[in-house]
Length: 304
Image (cartoon, rainbow, N blue to C red):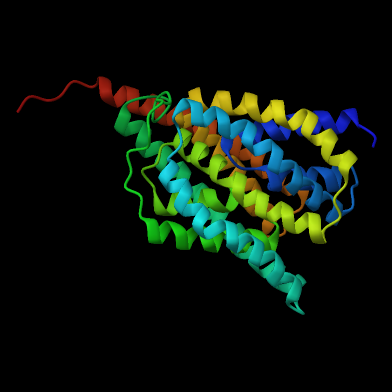
């Protein structure tokens, strides 16, 4: 077993993003392995999934200690997603047209991620105006999410997400983030990330079992990734549990945009350019929106 220092650096960067946002492992690490390190696609996917099994808990523990996890929501998500993820892997193996089905499902997921990114941008602007804060929701508060969990709907949507993860090999965070955004739009960014990270641990465990049995797992590759990814995820989760919600939502929006474009077939340069433009353009828009709101709030009310 050989350890690659550059893989350690790559794992560190991806791990930090996963800990910070709760997503991005499958959307970032697998393309990095394929396009940067020239790893065989099957080996990249299998090793990435197994690495995520050890990387996700590093961030999940931090959020559990900070209180930014809804354990009831995690339970009902896992009721549907864990068995569905394993069944999805078995199902796609049994279909004679698995590759074409995989491409169609990835396009659907890509469109869903792009819609979710637009929704995040709209909510960030509205939340900034509502809270009169440049950072939208303000600093993360270590309290449980004040949302009412709907068991049946959560389990059903978890099952859909788990099935798609098992059939398309798309990262669990990318799919479940969209599910949680659609089902619980009032969930704070830090709570969204924490809940997603915790539920992803058993989900990824089910997917890892399938890849260990049917994939092309590389011990040396996975070990190199984990040396960097585990401390990266730990550091990213610490930043996430303390960071202002508005900043997290902007990061999530950029990751959703990049993941969605990649899933619908955009090339790596197009994805990088779009993410860069979104980063710059989003911050410029936020700056002018903030300045406009500040000027508007300083205008004295006209007496009636």
